[in-house]
Length: 171
Image 1 (cartoon, rainbow, N blue to C red):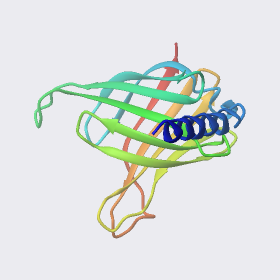
Image 2: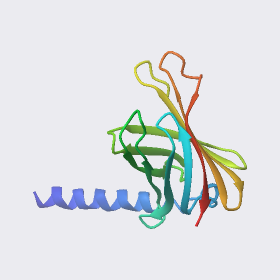
Image 3: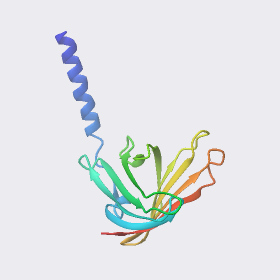
Image 4: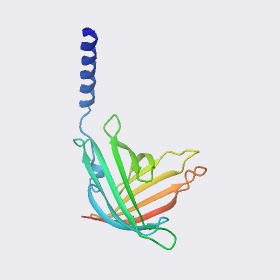
């Protein structure tokens, strides 16, 4: 039994060394997004106001995005709030390329990331059973960003339609 414990401890230590030897993560494509933002937007849920933030966590190994939006009551529906959390993480090579999202409406979305010189785009995989989602952040200038959240029906995964769009200012 002691021999097994020694082997197990040795294996765990060697695995932790492999994980630690991956080097630093290059978050430079997110540099403009890191911080706190406030804004307003409009779309299918209605006119809303709120904010979001991108912050490094776990020693810089992940980025955490938190968002809070308030939608006032209209003649068609009661006031409501939307809160969500997204964790952006690197692949095995240390490249930030994936994210997972949760919200207070019980949605969970797994995203793959793409980048341009002015934008970061989160896109979910196509599925025959679920809508496809695309969340885009496009820098307008150093302190202003345009955010779009689009959806595509399962039968037409490439035909994204605007669900919500808004502009935000960096605090």
